[in-house]
Length: 457
Image 1: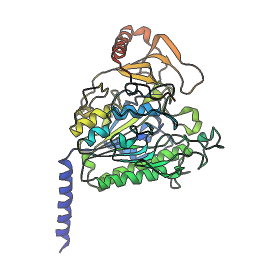
Image 2: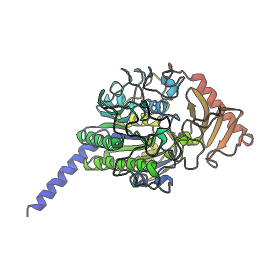
Image 3: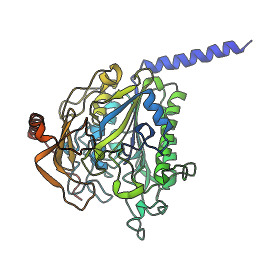
Image 4: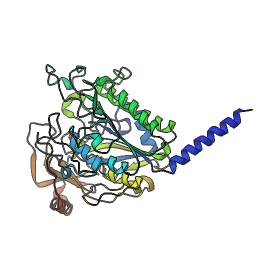
């Protein structure tokens, strides 16, 4: 006879928790893969990598078909996501493409990150995973708005140990102690070299713990995975389980991790008050052979401004707020800054150019995104621009190729709606489109104020 009162009490407690959660600003979780290709997920058509959790997210939420990272390599891509600005504005460009362990530069202290913006609104903030925006005072995660930081300071193939072959990273069985990369928690090295076989598991445990600890207040979780960047490692639970080899093993473990995050949100009773966005920092590293991913038929890959280098899988999930569907208008990672600010009730900075827009009307109301130009940067070079379904190339190159970039005069024009693989130049048939895009490029260049370069060593 006492069972019914207990059930009623439990139901009342759960209702009270959900009601309290819905009365506060929403939680925001950004899950960022490293070097994941446009075609590497089941919901993107991959035939041999199983991603049931991401596939379910895509079924329950919005899947973007034309979503972009703001750069084709790690460092500038991450800077753009966190600041809502093209990386050249913050100086994340230079003689090198990314930051290295010996680099002096980093994300300038004057930049405002999503974490800083939301922390000022009472959010708990956490960075878990790869950082790659600087290791010196001022540019480290805890200096850039994160209460908690747990992960690697840069890519997992850096700090290669003496005696480790230069091509070891692309091996299907890379040496476990081949790289002296540290695992850092709030500025303190807790393991060096990190055992990369356990990285995804430990990142996930930290993320789940952060969610549980902060379930009664709004939080921002930036969960930046180290994989499937080479060298590739998987835990015993996943190694050897994918038909796609070690690359598939790491992606399937990443999918498991996404499932654990979703499970933690549901367990805490806050899934209905949380936006989760999954995407990647740039396209697949094609020069790594079978240890590189799939572009899903797009041209080019990492370090290229062909579509395969910057168009990424992206899923937005929020049960009860985001209706299932597909968004085909172009959007990009810089939009997450403005979208997060709008959800948190924060004021977008007006003392600097912010390049993103609020995706809320599209995600929550189904409104089409406005047409706007998207500029493809490779380091400091503006190489292409997309407007609507058309993309104009001024310079093309294959990622990490010894062949020098090719300058196109007149520029190449591709109709991405009909030709996403960028095979047929239609510039001659659409001079009016070329003129419109070139006018947008001229306006952008005239107003561009580039930051002091941070990647010169």
